[in-house]
Image 1 (cartoon, one colour):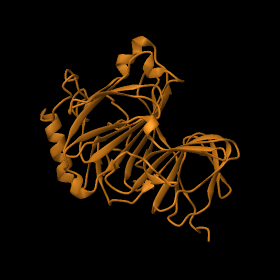
Image 2 (tube, rainbow, N blue to C red):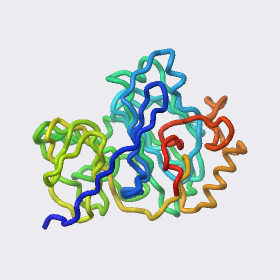
Image 3 (cartoon, one colour):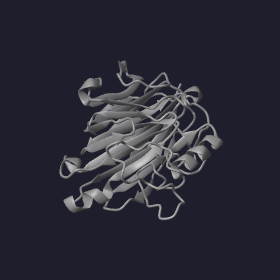
Image 4 (cartoon, rainbow, N blue to C red):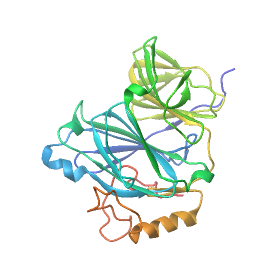
Length: 313
């Protein structure tokens, strides 16, 4: 029997980070703080920058605690460095899964022209809350190439499972709690069944348009489905879609780049960053992003307090 509860529609809040880089923020939203363990969802770009503008768009070193960041590119390239000594490039279809745990710092740098190839830099960055018992785990970083991720192509619906188990496929990316994250490309008229086996599920339309139960959803919109929802998404035109969800982990406090079950822990992280007690990436330690609210604190990256209400708890 179909669900009697209508899907929840989330529309993005926009921020211009300068240099033509626009960010759409979907989570957290006033009506929906999270979907499964996903507490944050940003879609940045696409943007192409001139060589002289590239350094100004770089994301300088900044800290995280209590979460895992998930970076996935649709086009372009990013150079990642972190306080564990990682120095790697992320390219379209690959996934960077960085577990902050008790604390990590990282930077994201752009190099011309590779960073803006393939139609411009386009990044999806999500944050995953960690189970409370793992919030203070040792930080870790894992890069998984695109060709290591499972793919299915049938009936005009191509999909790649970025993380988790869904549609009978399992990603090799290690996660800390039950979740799924999928990149799908649908031809016009194709259908894709809603994922099953998870209590919270959502779909984000990157490009094109979808229909579900007679309602059309356009690019930039996120649809959060009822727990008992069934049926399929239909592409009313060619569409790029990200599907995500899993099991919720309970309320989390968010401030800037910090996520925790404890307000006190976030206050400690703020004090530690302001006092310089975080370790910076060993090969990128000459500059950093100040704590928001401190003198001369600039606008920063997607997920670095640039778009209210990410600072709300």
